[in-house]
Length: 261
Figure 1 (cartoon, rainbow, N blue to C red):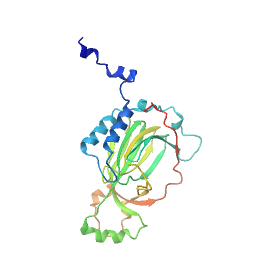
Figure 2: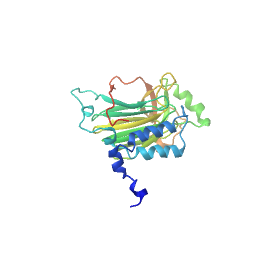
Figure 3: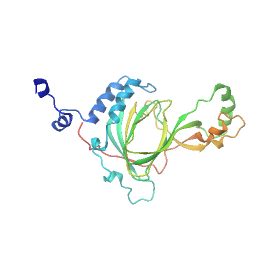
Figure 4: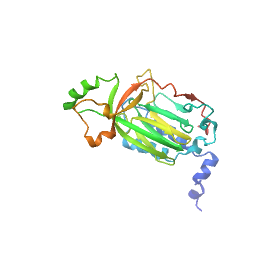
């Protein structure tokens, strides 16, 4: 063994000795770099997206100190929609890194991410995810579509389904962007689930980045002859209608007690 080899510490031993940053610490450090000069609508470069995803994909529940038997994931005695627990790891002006803990049948209703890039990782569990992106109606149809939209309640808008599927951990990190990737989504837990989220930039009422909730309505609501969608594609479109935060959607904030960062 030469001197160089003698100074090499295996990665597993580095973790035990505390010489190597944790996965969460590496993620925080990378997000600080990536989102340092960002803002609403500013998308990280493909290289920076890959940097974040490469770390995200290696994070699991043990890295944040969560197990399915914790109290966060119990449905409780109530017959209503289960309460969801929100664990903030870091909440900064440039980005936030948080965990959502959903008991079985827990629902995060359909909502948007205005001007944000968001990374999401299902740490454990199985859930149904449905997501949409807004449709930009071609200019030659806009004059026909918009007057018809005004017959509906304010805030109604055409969207296209991006994802409508069941995801079961372990699975890859998903990323959504300000204009695509499924910027509006809904989560429905089939089992207890833990979801790790990074938002850059985060929600901010002061900066005009409020979270807006939506009903999704069948495309058949569209009442006119001017039809911007081919008949065979009707099932992949919907009208999204703004709504208030649902009365049965309860989120409680709790302290993040995972590994120290």
